[in-house]
Image (tube, rainbow, N blue to C red):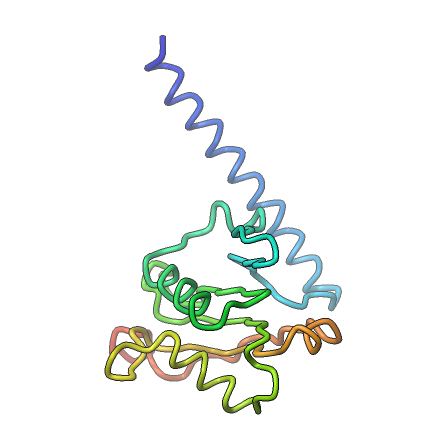
Length: 170
């Protein structure tokens, strides 16, 4: 009956997720090797014109923990982005949630210099004392919608030199 079906369906769902992730990974490797790669991962994109969170196929099975959710929600509330990607770039275990890369496109950046846009993003995710609740926030893109329409390139992240986010050196 119903009990035997649930584990079988869970297994089928897991296999489908695994296949999708492998297909997306191979696509990314191919794009990277050919020089077409712009952004390696896009865990979550928010499109406020539709007022619904939109996720890529790759993100449906990717790890997304409470710190990443906090980063996404904080930026969304403060800046109302038309496009946003929060990428967990933690080296070691992704569950550590120590490093994040942000792509944010917002009308609230209009008329602001780049340094102010970065401050706005940092303030959105900082705690009450002004400190980040994780090791590293890389702001890859902080653009207005018009700027994003002209250039959607997201550059590769540099190697972190400051430890693993738990206070331990590499």
